[in-house]
Image (cartoon, rainbow, N blue to C red; front, top):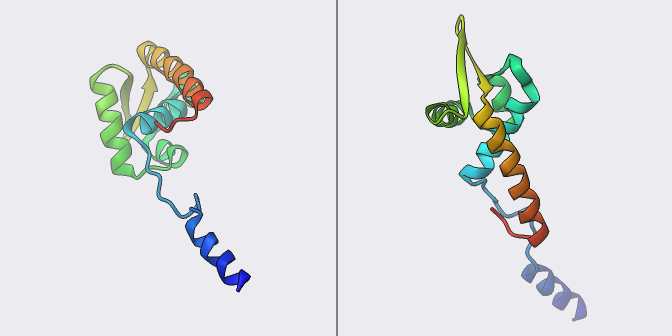
Length: 111
């Protein structure tokens, strides 16, 4: 009898691995900027950003286009490849987001 109660209690405890926690647009922006920062002045291709940020090709293109429109990254086209390079404005945003991320972790909220 006690074992069935234990199983019922197990069902009421949520398992964080079963929950789908999707990233916010801020989280996606952070991942893209981080990949661009790691790439440095040579820039990074859509394919590499897709791998590092764990995003689909179209999600990377859409988000990088948005970041390009506001001057956070710039785009170079080499043959058929688009290369994204973080701008000075993007570097400043990256460091501000990094500060924000540390603060959010300290107060334990999800962004």
